[in-house]
Length: 356
Image (cartoon, rainbow, N blue to C red; front, side):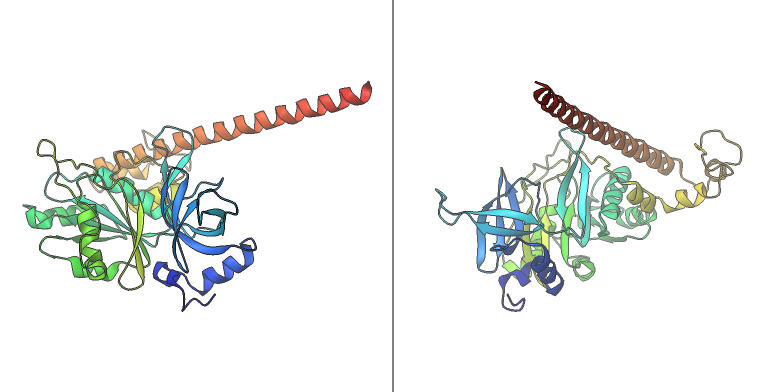
């Protein structure tokens, strides 16, 4: 299949993906990209358009590149199934919202993560740091968009405050209503773009502004925030992949109530680089940064060179990440123990049968 003649180029299909598909995909299957997932089924963009497919046995998510095949003798006409998932270049993963000891993939093969935060009220720095850790860990490039800047009273101060806690990330003040900063935001977005943030942050409004040149109208439903607490109404209920200008794609996501850390050690390090540099200067390699002599972290804190809130946020994310990792290890160990017991029972049954 020529990559220049297929609809898939609108969704990011290229020669590298074509080579990977040729090497790994099963025979009699076609390449596609998952647009949305819903209860064991998904919409997949293929060369000829969009097909409905069964998700298969492996968990997949919006943004995945997959191989699909038509289901023969299906009761539903033109039904397809996902036969395999191509290796992901990146994935945004949080701890499962259900409390299970496994990660939940929010989006796959993402190049840019836009962290949307409403600037017309109290800005939650800790939440931004959480989302930055997720973004850095995924392998994508984070961009912090301070939305609703036209309604913010002290946007310059907020911009400076957020920039200080987001080293290495682009931080912009934007307004989808007045178009302030939207040209700069559009210029820094590349490849597949995922927009993350809590409900009420203006994610769908921001997405509609970015999609305007492509669709000519609002593609995504939006809603006003509640007057009592400023929270949104979750107008986005599923993750959906949409192509837009510049051969890019966009994933709008539902508002995130909880953002738990999942195997995000590297992402946390990149979110707090100044603390990691101080840790390297501590006298003891196993310093807990509580009361140890020669602790560079505590010294910087005492001098006022390190913000106490930022250190508390770092410690909180580290503890959470370690706790979730321990839960995962315990689950894997329990699964291995069950497998060993099953094998042992089969072996005992086998040898008892030989002895008779």
